Image: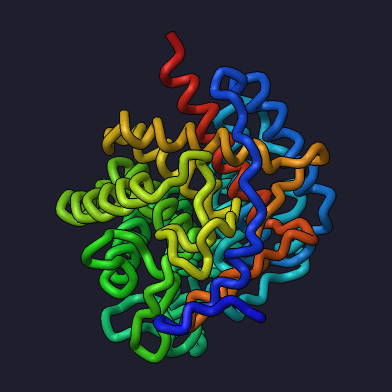
Length: 371
């Protein structure tokens, strides 16, 4: 018989079957050489997994590879330019907000090379964002992921593109636009009591499921904005507001972190999902915590939480570089139980990409605090 808590209508059947967490890595083992070699395996596996679409998972991988190159001081992997160049030759045809995600790498390539094709690619994506009928907005101005729905995913997919494009094409107003999107999404999705982010809203109503990857997307976008704000001459008041939102969110996540480091798929310990771990959300949160600490946001607390998370995450990187326990592409669920099933039977690009973000941020943190 399926165990159901009848009084509250909860189905805890999947939580009851949750596997015990893997033992985390010993903190003293997480030295630069191990982190760099592990990150290289993750990137190698991402290159061979068959990435072919100009879509969100691919965009997360490309950005992860760029972050890793920056953290290690090594050349950008040829895969990044080859992937972008192939799609530019074939023609980018965006049709959804997720198609903006690889544009962040296109903008970075323009910043590195000043080659016109990358600027043209960015302009194509910006034109679509400005004029396509499928781009809709909620009453408060937040870009909708689907008509009638504001999702946390959009803050990263569109926001990171706007920020990188704004920085590399001398258009600071695009960075400001990304900040406006962060604030508009927070109005809908950040819980006023806890500071955690819901995955999304449906027909104007926020569904208060605090999905891990949603918190990763919003935290990474906010960290990206705060890093870019001084270079873009961003409005100090907006920057302060984003900083406060990010601080509240990350401190709340630290409060909900398990001792083994890896957050549940819903990060607040919701009974239907308690003990069901999901690694891509943890990877993104880890990177955001390291980056926020470097910005002076609760550095002692967030660095400790980030290193605990990385130690837990490290145990889930397979020998071939696959980040295991990563959920599949996940549409907005209207009830918490919908998040309980983790696709651990296949590699996921966002898992690889967010893991690269996490290891790159950890390497940067070690370099910054080297004795």
